[in-house]
Image (cartoon, rainbow, N blue to C red; front, side, top):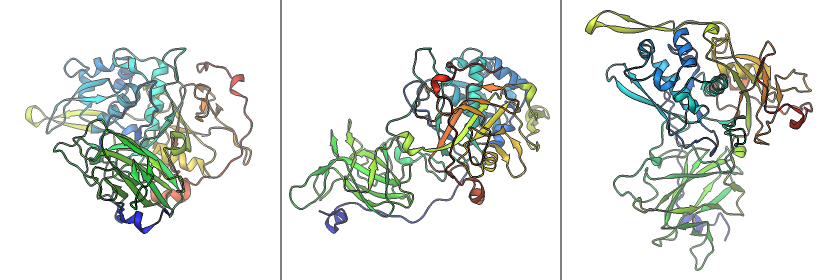
Length: 514
């Protein structure tokens, strides 16, 4: 039967919505399953550049130095930690910065308890680890390599607007000399659990509590995979449902331990039932019960879709759904991380934790006494030309048509004036022939994970070498750029590159900078 057959369309839940939600401010991060040496490092950036460069922890010389020389659990202990640092947590930007620092440094199994002094509900809170780039920092003073790895990670996770953007973060780091690279790539990329415009966690990925059932419910779903397709073509995906209701029919995909439900969403993130990105959803096909689903939908303009699975009843335990796309569809399903995140931004490197190299100073001061005491953040409204962290650097992929403009939008809170930047933009990351550009990184693809395209051995404006760089990849070129600036700063063009020395001819392990 043809894929666009009215019979198949009639027995499949095919839902289209036309409205998109309006943007709101950033939301708290969830803790993804990103463990050292076992998964890719793909975490979102939603830290505003302003919060990164002007906060009372990292942009305060005393707390900056303490951070770089202390164990996190000791420094932020709710009762025994440093009193001045605890006072500086009256600054919401300081707490936001620490959320991202701990997320970069520690693993999902680690957390740092601290006392949140802010009204109206002061109390003990916690920051939870995510990427695991420096787990020892929880209980011991960090090494210089640790500080540089975390600095690069935090810088990579900021953007001027504070919009949540999914990143693929790549680099070179082994916890043990013979161990695997902590920056690994996922063979099958899962859809994001947040709404792409608002950054809000999607209700559909929360647990069900009332025994809900059916494909229209917004709980109990699991992200399954991402597919690409030819826009406007008809695509069919299934988890064990029949391709036709007219007599015996082959099935598409499979489900074990109970019937499944499917939902297909536009783009690389999941969706809720009433989301305008919902392309289609279904439980059983052809009216049979119990049964498994097939969903038919029209490929969206962007050419990407994501699939969510769930048991038809939330009380079912142990469902295993194997989703497949019909081979006759103009579609490829189950894309890898490299396929989904293929736009190389550039590299981030340096060290935030150099108190003598801060271009500004932020402090929290107490005014008044007793019940009338108030805490005021001082210095967070300054405008500083260039980078506030003078030992942080960024280079851009030369495929950007206007690399300097793109990089300024990425690392500066005030990009049009080049002010309140989190890093100094050093230039293109590697050499190109047309036009001739001097590259800042000696390696385009580090040896620990061949093919992941990570820049290594990058130099700053003084030609000093940094060895703990992070390279980021985006899903789409304009993901981090405000709409009004996209025409000027996020256009891509193919750039021929010079032949660099093979990896085997470069020093490895990489040497420390001088």
